[in-house]
Every structure is written in structure tokens, then in C-alpha cells.
Image 1: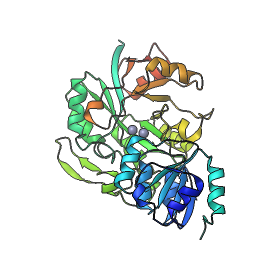
Image 2: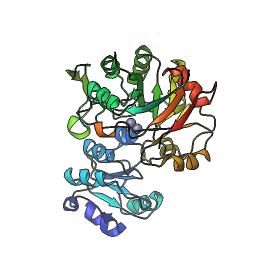
Image 3: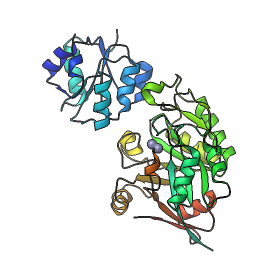
Image 4: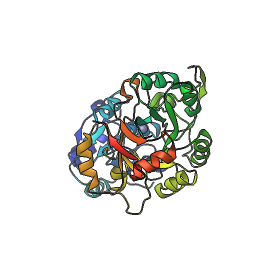
Length: 114
Length: 248
Ligand SMILES: [Zn+2]
Ligand SMILES: [Zn+2]
């Protein structure tokens, strides 16, 4: 499923790399511990988190994560957005809590295990 | 005789991937002296390989350099360990390296990790993933620091990222921290007011400098006889007339 479709059906707001939304999300991963994401996320995952620090972008690039969704109305730091822009990592935000958003993603057919 | 020593106990060098490349031990010492600091602590992320160079660079000056490290716990909480001598911090470093997340630093994504000597000469580059986390729980990090005679301080608790409040939500009651650090972004009286309600721990402030301009932006005054770990411990505990004050 393309990120653009996820953005549309979950009503996400895109804050960076809006030119990269035709990328495919192969699955999803949810975690607020960066070391855990480094260890356990899969290539092509969309990542659901509360963390807003610029390091989330570096982790996403390293792990080939297709996009990051910040939940609960979290706003990324300015450095995070500019780094995400230059690394072409879409950062999206939603007011939904993680549990609700992940439920929607699951209903769309995205899985955490594959 | 008690003196008032101006201390900035949280300064990164060019070994930290996120720090400015100009943060060489020699330049840090010069900047600290120019800003009339009496004590600094060299705190790189999960490494102490530039500590000895900074101590050497300060030799013969009025500046004391405290060997230290900013350790990332398994919960991704930053904890500063301040030590009495370079041997102790290197022992801590061994424990940290043994438990640091595997993988190599990506210089393009995270930044260079430069090991420098006291004359500003590049000795090498660390390829460890210093930005990563250790698998050591915060309790064990603090216990490890204490076993080596050091002081354990929770970093920048007023910030969301990598702080004990951001990661754990509150400060566990029986955690034997020696102090809590607030960053210079928050006004010190406001900090004392905010954080005295949630914890009985003493509060200090430091710059968490990642570039030369930031050195001395957060200063804690230690009223002590000498700039030693034992004296600083007394000051944090308000013992024997020793005490700490946050500089405005
Ligand atoms: Zn820190
Ligand atoms: Zn720091």
C-alpha cells in the first residue's frame, strides 16, 4: 500500500518529503525506543512513535523505513523536519493515540509481522 | 577554607557524533578559562576517549577537568557519571562498550567521532555506535557509577528527549541519583520550583555544550574546599557547610 493512500484514509498531516508519498509501506512497526526500532523494525515499515528528536530520521534512513507517523498530536522539532526533508523521509502527524491509529492501519491490511 | 567554584559539568567533545567538530579538548579548556569556569566535566556519549586529552590540556591552568561520561541506559535515559580519576571513567567505559548496541557509526547520518590529543591532533576515529543505547538498566548504570566511586546525575530532566522524565514519566522513588540536571533553557528558579515537587534530589544546571559558544551557558556554583568528587558529593548533600547554588 502506498503511503499516499494511508495519508488519505487515516487523515494524516504530512510535514516533510511530500514528494515521496508514492513509496510502498510493506508493514508497520510501533515503538518509542530508538534502539528497539534499530533492532526489530523491517525494511519498508511505516513507524508509529511519540519520539520527535532528529535521531528518528537517522534511524529511519538506516533501517529503510518508508515513513514516520507521530501520534497524539506530537509536533516534531524543527531540526527533525529539515533533516527528514533532506533525507526524503515523510513525517506525518495525527491527533489519534497510537492504539487507534495502529488499529486503522491494521484494518487497511498492514501487518507488523510478515 | 571554602571557595565558590563555578562548574559546568556537562560538555561534549568532537568524539560525540552530535557535537561540533571544533569541540577539541584544547579549545574547550581555553573557552572554559576565558569564561572563568573553575571546573568542567567532559561528558561524551557512551565514551571517555577524549577525557585524558582534556585533563592534559588543562594541566598547569586553574581549570579542573572532571573525567565523566554521558551514558545511555537501556530505557534511553541519559545519565552522567562524574569520576575522581581517569582510571575510574575508563573502567566505566569498558562496561559501557561491553553492553553498547552493536553496529557501526554512520558518519554521514550521525556525525564524525573524532579522538584528539591535548595538542588538537587527530589520533583516530571511533567507529562504535556511540549514539546508540546500552543494554544496562538505569538502576545498573547508577550502581555501576557508584561502585567506581562516582556521582550519578540524571541529564537535562526538563527536556523530552533522552531524559528520565521523558522516557520513564517520573523519577522512581528509590533511585539513588546524586542529582538532577536541568538544562540552561529553563530558568533556574523555575526549575527548582518545578522539580522540587517531584523529587527530593538536589538540582544542578549545566550547558550540555555541543559547540564552543555554549560552554558556560549553565553554571552551578559549588561551595567547597577543593574541586574533588568527595567535596562535590558533600555539596550536593548539603553537608559540612558545603552546598550548591544555581547561577542565574
Ligand atoms: Zn543528553
Ligand atoms: Zn549531553
